[in-house]
Length: 418
Image (cartoon, rainbow, N blue to C red; front, side):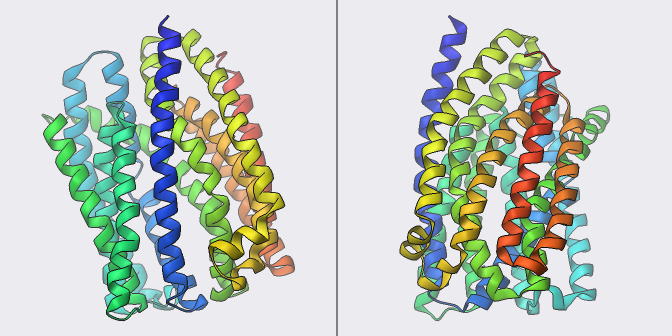
């Protein structure tokens, strides 16, 4: 009976999150359409790279503390240990603040010695730093909310962000758009959801009690392998873009980014259901209930295949039409790369389910090894294929690495006997 109830929870909450995700994704595309029509392809490439630096920095410099907080809040809730839950929030919060400060110093030094890589002015880089602080804070509070099995709240906050992005950009466009204005619009859009997530988390769950040094060590022990995983994941997502910047240029990067962004729509469906599945199985691992975990996993896999296979077919058959309708004819040049990356996103989505199981079972190091191996293959393949085939070469490299990640994670999950 409990298994059926959990299936209903996943289906019901998953559909709710999926609805918000799709609406938010539509708003996100509106933001990109407005931006594309307002600045040059080269400027859009610079903007995309700046956003990638923010994402990569959060993955690498925060040492996986937000992910560790989310995991241990859910785990200790499964054990019904309220004191540990409260200590996790307080300890994780203090560590996160310290790491943000250290990260800003590192980013500033990198900009000081390598200013030509991002091609940003000083004022634009300052906005990027503000954006990093806001996103890092939002992610921490969302990790607390997520650990209390409320992914629908985090998705609602994410939805607010996506809605605010085109609104703030439209206001900026009225006063004259520039690269500075585009980044400023993103900062404004991120600031409000950050405030909302902070207020909700503090009012609902508090700021915790007592900084626990031993717990801090546990958070780092879990988080550092997660950092390796997140960093490697960002290599999977951004190494191709960095190399396109080096070998081809910002214009090609803009075209590729749009193709990648559109193919990633498929991941919305995976993440919607996995987001509610994750805290549930983490609690079940705390209870050592592998029977329910096995049943839920099988049920979710069938559901994801049923939803995502038709989307994959549509993307492959109508790639050029989709890019032309959503953006402009200029971006339709990325149609072949879009078709190739559709397969990559499908493989990556399934592998995300398997790596979620490994993380929830307390095996983040295995996930780190898998993602690092896949990222190494991705970087090597990009280095060889981009000079030969341009953005299509980058897409092929991504397919190879995503498929490898799927195969490796599948065999590791089989070892858990679930």
